[in-house]
Amino acid sequence: MRGAQVFMDSLLLHGANRIFGNPGTTENSMLDRLIDYPDIEYYVTLHEGVAVGAASFYALASQTTGVANLHVAPGLGNGIGMMFNALKANAPLIVTAGQQDTRMRLQEPLLSHDLVAMAKPVTKWSVEPQSANEMAPIMQRAFKIANDHPRGPVFVSLPVNVMEQETTIAASTSGTLERAGIPHEDSLAQVATLLQTALNPAILVGDDVAVDNAVAQVVALAEKIGAPVFHEGLRCQISFPSRHPNQRGAIPFEAAQTAKKLARYDLVLMLGGHFFEDIWFDATSPIPETTRLIQINSSQAQLAAKISVDLGLVGNLRTTLEQILLRLNEAGSAESGQAATERNSNLAEEHQAIEADHADRLERLWDTSPMSPGRAIREISQGLPIETIVVDESITASLETATHFDFRQPGDYFAGRGGGIGQGIAAAIGVQVAQPGRRVLALSGDGSAMYSIQALWTAAHHDLPIVFVILANREYRVLKHNMDIYRARFGVGSNKPYPNMDLNTPVLDFPALAQGMGVPGERISDADDLAGAIESAFATNAPYLIEVVISGKQ
Image: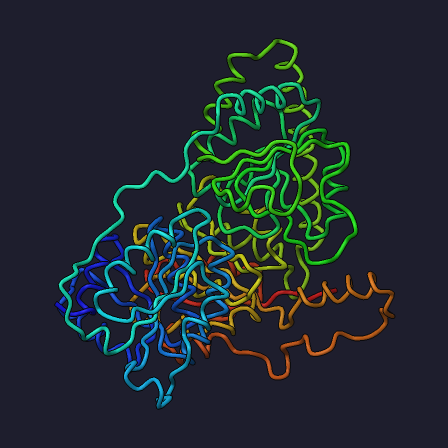
């Protein structure tokens, strides 16, 4: 057998039967063999960034390992931004690129480069087999490393001649691996005691709560101790129900503001996240001096990586929280139970006040023209079929998205990490492939959409019934907000305009762009027409685009 056969067999042995790629000449070994492997489906993209974005979100939505196929050095370069995002999202991903025949290495053939060096900074492991005999052990290790905590992308360069060399070493796996167990009994007891005796505890959740299927346990814990639950500023998934009374939204991107938000809590429990990915420098800690800090993570690498903790534990979040809850139930007192009940009651009242404030703000802007982002999101939410998955890159409308949609469990919502824009439309491709039984809404800003607009063609080509909604404020609104913060922080005069942040000369025509790639679409300017347009778009059971004209920064 040849190296290419071992590669394809390795994919199937590890349950990786979907490839998202942009084909090229150095990938002929793989492409030609797809005919002999009907169980492996190849999804064609028109840009390598779209392939990586789709593959990484396919991995998150399917809870398997994604595979992206890129084309030599320029193609790998095109995919590196999305590989960075996948690394930050802890997406288990195998990224490959065809490499020129190594016998031509000293001649520096067309499109060749050191692919391993290019990929190394944005992957957990970057490697190139030197012979077909290395293909099986490299692929076995690649899948293992991609799925070891913290999970992430691995890059494998595939030289043409290695793919066509003969070998007797067949594909293999690492076997069944138990990656995270339960912390020591003494540590669990200590956490339970700290939580039970805290006067005003809070919880911070990250994406690994969803990965470890621990949302129900976090809900039970929050209700048991009467704690508000905050999530990271950037998140990929739902780690706590969006409309639960204890939900308190995202922590800020500034340490001083985070410390201010957490100042009232004497104990903070951090669960399964990167935490404190700030944008702006503050010479202060995000955790107040009077607050004790517990961290529980699936990964040793993320434990106390950025900030000292009073107690840190490594373990599977679901089983660890189950053990903590068991101890709290066994040792609970009437006094601590009453205190938690009072805190839950106060949180419910605060939650009602927050919802009333959101409703009041929405009502004040209800009839504005162009429609407000809040009105647009409200109307969109009213037109969705039951069980629709939302892939969100609305950015400056993310607060409205969290407010008006009812996200209850992992799989209801996906968004990008890393901060690189353009993930939303590409991600929707991967999510729809991973979840063919559910409908998918891709929600994107207009600036973000232009980074991966080619994904519309892939949706049409593979008949993926995604509804793409482009919120068109015709500006990079988030950059304008950040410009305001920059000017305030550094004492720069604020009476200047916003340079190079408008997208209105010329105005982007998204229905026309979609039509050119085989996706029908329309533009909605009247908010009263939006919910009906969303319903009709989903009823087509085919890819469809709606551009929604919304107000810009006031």
